[in-house]
Image (cartoon, rainbow, N blue to C red; front, top):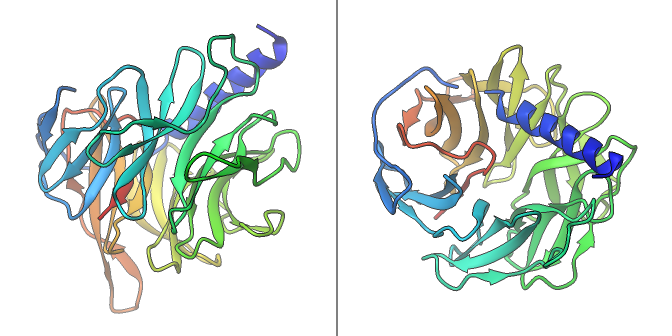
Length: 324
């Protein structure tokens, strides 16, 4: 293995561990699920919530959990198409990743990207985190095909026309989790620099015109844009804990919704009235939601957490996608 590849993999591992081991609410209950076919959710949710479990993609809906992928490779990072008829997801091979789409019932699996098939993977040929554009005509994703660390890329919904959206600003520039604005003009992204990660809002039409909207001493990550476009939720490290915060999409003062010990991936519900996230419960990451209301001062506040899974195990780096 080349020194460059070893260094990149080592740094990527550090980044992944730092993000995964950072956020948890104080509660507990019980549920079932062992990786086979279907499970029981503790609380019902509106809509359909995609998540990863034991290397497969699952969906939580109407008080139940069901499996969409059936092995063959490690599957994760799913995202609903805007109309809910399809989902995009990442499939891991022995030494590569590719982006696929499939129908909402798990049928019709179709590969969009073509990484190095049948040969040793080069130092820069990974793809991650596909996210449909609000119109459903494009998919943004992460790739290090032409850079040392991942940057934002875009392709049409059929996989044609892949191209880089962002370019590195320096040798340590990297982008991780991200979310589209509802009007498709901006993307909120976790962006690393020489210091800790922060949330940056990137203009899709002019990607160099980007604004950093957080200033978290311990770092900010995993942004999710509200369905109505005016707010962004994200996770932030505060000492040994992680908090889930909400901030105006233009920036400004943030406020805390949930304080956790270890967790990730806040995700708005389609109605904008709840947020889902994952948090460590015992030895497993589990799925939680909080309901959102407005207090008398006009501030958004969260309810006590509702636990959706228990003793089930949600993949901590697979992300969430909440559809109708």
